[in-house]
Length: 271
Image (tube, rainbow, N blue to C red; front, side, top):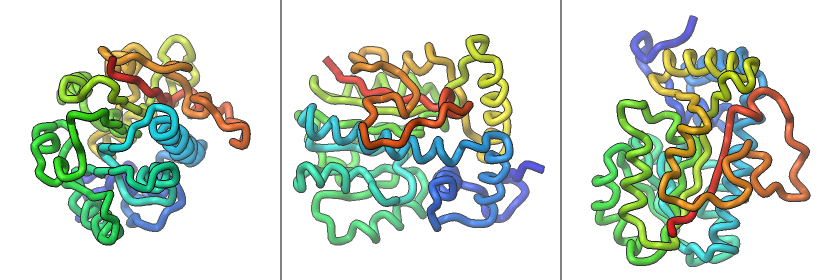
């Protein structure tokens, strides 16, 4: 039986389910139950989570080392994990500034405790669908200069934004608020529909499971994911499976299982 937030005292959390899939320790029994149900449907979900972390590393490295981005807003940042955005950015520029944003107060409190001694990084409690809370937050402005290019990070976030909350409107609002030269990096669940019926079937089952358990979880088409990037110039190699986005020679060979085709990533630039 799928666990629902309505049937337990502690609701499962997308951030904690993801933490479990990454092999972390910041999760509860209710989160593990959802994760195990997900793994029963998609046995390679743990590898997909690790592929997402590797994509985060490569995308942030590109933004700092190649695009010259020195300030980041990581929306829906989730629980701290080894290889977080500020650690990657600081390996290239110790002065790079990072604001983590999450709508879970427990996640934000945990992040603030870990970042207490870091003068270049902070965590803010806000919701991605209410961008005015973020753009107008004094703490955000203490770290981010909106007159200079910003790296907006939406890793594994927008597939938890419901259609009625207009995820394409979220990215359009961000684009309007950002100066030229800013970048947006995202990863998102993907349903290929008739192009790959076997993958689509697993995607539909996974979407129903996570929607029932977490209240969110949307596997969108490639066209819908491209709509999220409207007005940005998508960098090569485009919107692709995570392991295919500028892989490192040292990266392990990607597992070409069903989830490989259900988790896409892209990096784009505001002209």
